[in-house]
Amino acid sequence: MISWLRSLFRRSAAPPPPEAYVPRARKRKSEVGAKGTPAPPMRMVSKLGADPSMTEVLSEVIEQLGGPQVELDREQWAGLAMRIVGLADTVPPPSFPRIASEIVEVARDPDVDVNQLVGLVQRDAAIAATLLRVANSVAFSPAIPITNLRSAIQMMGIQLVIEVALGASARAYYEVASKAELALFPGLWQSMFEEAMANAFTCGRVALDVPTGRPERALVAGLLADVGRPIALRIMARLVREGMPMPAIEIVHATLDEVAARIGEEALRKMELPPELLEGCIPTGETPTADSMIARLVSAVAAIQRRSPRIWGNASDVRAAAEQMKLSPHLVRTLFAQREQYMMQAKGMFGTMR
Image 1 (cartoon, one colour):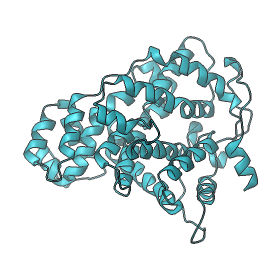
Image 2 (tube, helix red, strand yellow):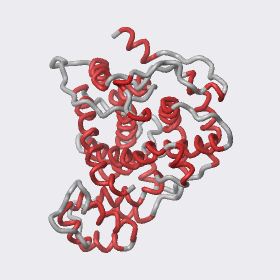
Image 3 (cartoon, helix red, strand yellow):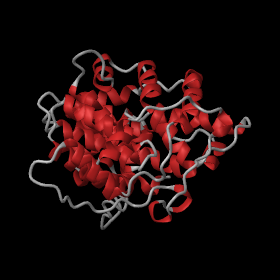
């Protein structure tokens, strides 16, 4: 426990030069999947007592996951992280889709009019096509193909349709821009949107347990919580194409987790989000909104579940957000299982759409 706490709060040394982005630690085959991707998550059964501390809960979660993919010092990715942050303004994000704001408005009504929802979705061919593909995906496996939106809504339920429609409207933020980018980091690009949807589902669910949480706003905040990751990955791909040595995959994971929040916050400010949604996405001021804090918490949980090399820093982020919202260690422990389930759901719904 003492060594874990030291790792959690350790300070970094000066960053290395860009050409030094290679890991110095040896990977254990049992902890790393094919091509450096995280191994499948373990089914977690807690052995803690009735009143565990937050540190005990996070320590157990990390231990059951197998720890980080590989042990690294922050100095091994800090230089690359700084370089990417400095270039972030060169990749402006798309504006937030207007239809997504309209979907959020519909979601606030506890008695949503199905005809209104159908009419709204029909205005965007891409969202309509996504809903039909999801309705026919392995997650639902209908006995006969679903061919119209009304049937899809009846089968999926209004709440899930709203969630998927919001995800589809913001999917452009997580899509690969070129074949060259995809070729460099295929695994990351293929999972990024599924990760974002799992975050969105989880944030919407957690908001139900937080007195001041608003599920529809938390859903958007979760969807965009890691929007800095694809922006940073595009910059990294550009640097590699311009001659930078290809970083080891563990360095890539650590760098993305290091810069995602900072780059994502700047991107959110440039998206032309409605003020209320922007307030729900960015935790600012002395009293940030519950939805923005939920999104920050879930984003850090996601990084732990990816077994990032900066997993101890992610644990610190989880603890800080949970303590600020006064969430119990047991609720945080449950959050890991919930997000794991939502990740499986997202894979089943969107895995066939790559």
